[in-house]
Length: 142
Image 1 (cartoon, rainbow, N blue to C red):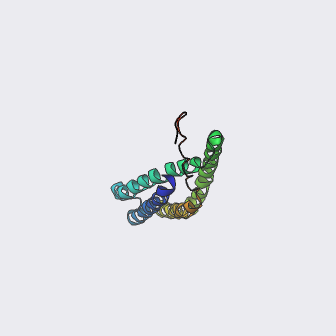
Image 2: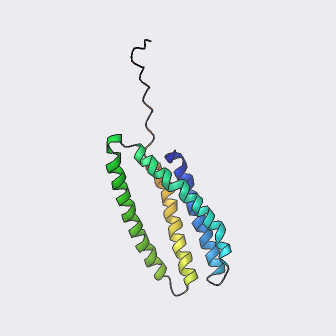
Image 3: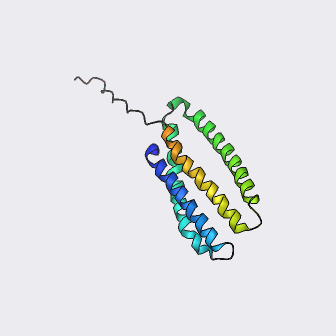
């Protein structure tokens, strides 16, 4: 399931972040937060369709005896990626000037670009292994 849904989820995530950037640029910090609702909904759908299937896709290509170690390594790399991502987004946000609405919109554009990168990189995901043929029950003849 992962390799099939991850590009759609990444695209929805990028589109939702783009909607949030446009809404934020339009209303700034003085407008109603209701304007953000469509973008937040699309971002939520994108995250759901992207991150969980990515995990199952990656772990589905691992030998069952190694899944625990692979899961731990993947979780560690995700945490490192989140920390670096927050640092980069923070630099962009605080380097964008004193207008918080503009800084937030610029940060959302950066995040949308990263989500578009997810879509491009899903082509590198391992493809599902072919299912092994079922073994014949003991004592059965063909």
